[in-house]
Image (cartoon, rainbow, N blue to C red):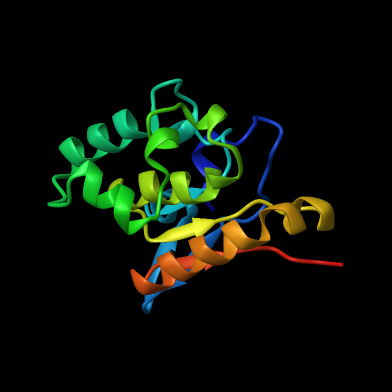
Length: 146
């Protein structure tokens, strides 16, 4: 859903892919405007700007009323890591990406599949991130498996 506009040329859908949201039919392209793929490969996160700079840019573009500092507190982000690019925030990366996506007005947060080992290393951070998104009435999709 999130990566649909950025899919590779070898990804083919043989039928028009559509989704129904609140009884409204949408194409994947329309739906992708509301979704956020929680991975650094997603274009929203591919910058080397600091998390603060990305959030400030999003606030300016979307006009949300929260300040960057209020967003930092809302997502329980470490003050020092907030001043770093996403490539340098360690295991807080999902909360950082969620904060940026929130400021972009995203409603659905799609997490990548995580191996058992990777999931266990992110478990506490993911739980906090999911709790925050739930409190903001956002949808989170987290693929899990054995």
